Amino acid sequence: MQLENTKTMENKQIWKFEIKEGSIRMPVGANILSVQSQGGRGMIWALVDPNAEDEPRWFAVVGTGEPFDETNMTYIGTYQESPFVWHLFEWKDKQQDNGTPN
Image (cartoon, rainbow, N blue to C red; front, top):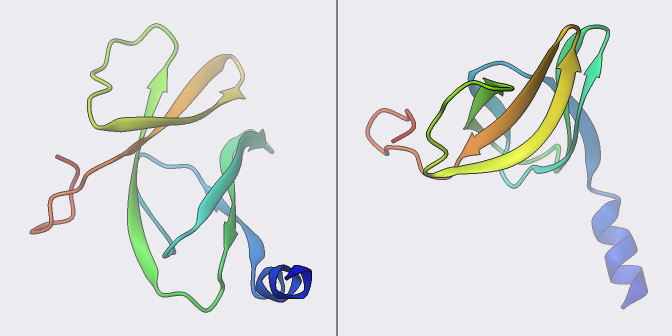
């Protein structure tokens, strides 16, 4: 059993994605591990299957103190870009016809 788990991990890599509002193309099944600032820019690190097809994943960036509706959103993490603190959310649902969040 342990050999199977090790073999599965050999197919995975950790990739970095720059945070931007809207969609970010990631391999299907990408598992977000961390959100941090690097070089003054927000970044996502995710465990991915490098052979998987890409898909758009939709994100919203919210500043501390900004009003917003978190309906259909999942909190991902918080990062700083001095002097601002940003909070990253992922949309849970997307419209199938045009790929934009509901």
